[in-house]
Amino acid sequence: MTLHMRQATLADARLLSELGNSIYRAHFKHLWVSEPELNQFLTAEYSLPVLEKSLQDRSVCWYVAETDRPIGFAKVTAESRIPDTDISGVLLNKLYFDSAETSRGYGQIMFEAIKTRARENGATFLWLEVLEQNQRACHFYNKQGMAHIKNTLFTTASQQSVLRIMGISL
Image (tube, rainbow, N blue to C red; front, side, top):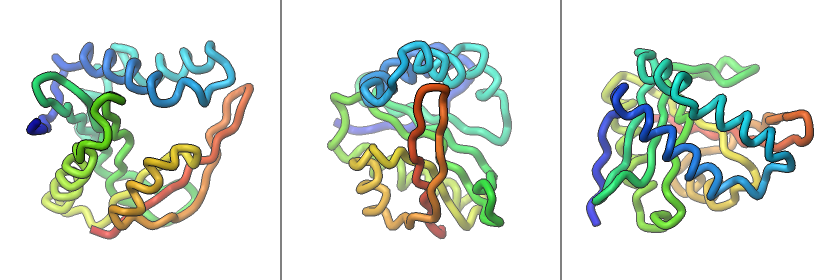
C-alpha cells in the first residue's frame, strides 16, 4: 500500500492526540514502572492543548502518515541544539507508526522525506533521541547512517531511561 505523508494542520490535533496515545502505549507501555507517570507523560506530549500550541509553532512541523487511513506521524523542530554541546540542527522529535504497520518500509520513506525537506530548508544536520531499550529503532537509525553522539537520561520519580542522541550530516 502506498504511503502518503502530509503536513498536519490545527484541524489534525485530535487525530494526533489519538495516534500519539495509542501508538506510544502499544510500543512503550511495558517500559513504564508507573501507570500514573505514563499518563502524565502522555498528557504532556499528546493532550489537545499541547498539540494545538505545537501545531501553531512556526518552528515545529507535524506530519501525518496515511495509507487508506492514518497510520503514524512525525514531529520535526526546525532548529534545536543538542544539550550540553555546540551541535545544532533539525530535531526529529518523533517518528511513530501503528504497530500493525511497522516493517513495511514506511519509516524509511518518512525518514528520507524529512531529510530531503530539511536539506531543502538549508539544514546541514539532523539529530534525534531514541530510547536505548528500543533496539529496533536504534538499528534502523544506524542503518540510515546516523551516528551515536552521546547518551542522556530521561528521569521520572520512579525510573530512569537512557536516551541515545544520534545525528547525521545532510
